[in-house]
Length: 260
Image (spheres, helix red, strand yellow):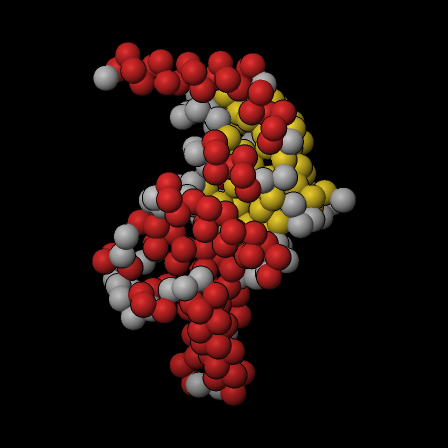
């Protein structure tokens, strides 16, 4: 059964077609990859799924519910968590406090309750801090817990953002370039961590990543975008051999070589 279903989604920006009748699905417990050259429309599709980008046409469904008209915060409460291509953390706060914000957003005590330290608010605070402690241990973030996130390497900041997203208890987790900032010698460990996250927290995953080898080694199924259109879909081995995919990535490499 599909947990996420994107049906014929089109997004236009003043005549420019960023997404052209794109459809994809993610089943429960599945890890799905979304790859494509720079500018293919990957992040635009994430924004369309999470409500940050209005659709020109098409629909988005979560567990058979049409969420197309819903705001991003409502979609998050229904179970969609995400990270961003550019890490979105509050730089003046510590790792611990950034993750804690995710729990507080889910619990929604409110200023009145928090200000008066009402029993419900106090109980939720205790539970939230327990969750944060568990996530920090699970993701190996103990050495960074009390450090400001602005001091941290990019790869660690991405783990902090994943931890904050998990605090919302998502059923579907969208990871946008979560492996960037991670050394190639660490990608195997990161793949294993993502599998543990999927299994431990019972989340499905949709992963946008520029590192094709990372996606192929992690995902059960892969979609490929190029110029806003799906050009391939299938299991990793089949996608890797697809001539349209090879041509799209060779074209990007040749463009980069010409510009250098």
